[in-house]
Image 1 (cartoon, rainbow, N blue to C red):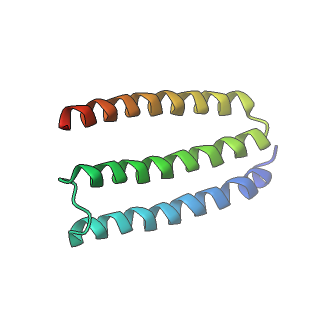
Image 2: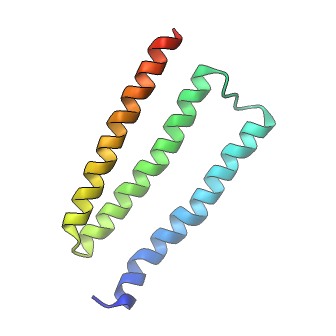
Length: 102
């Protein structure tokens, strides 16, 4: 594989999640500073978690599918397992915190 072939695969990914992530997190910061998104409210905390987790999840899925298309299957499986494990740990932590706040 040539670096030129790789750049055709990864440049759109970097653009999409670099610029898109910048805009996404800028929007979250703006809503936090304006007061319309209040992290003291438990429901707002849940939605923040869902938004950030969703962004990371789709970024991971896009990256894994790009790796598979480029023939790096073992690395893609490792990333999927890592993110799945982190997702389960984050869910359990979030669930424990949710049950304690009731």
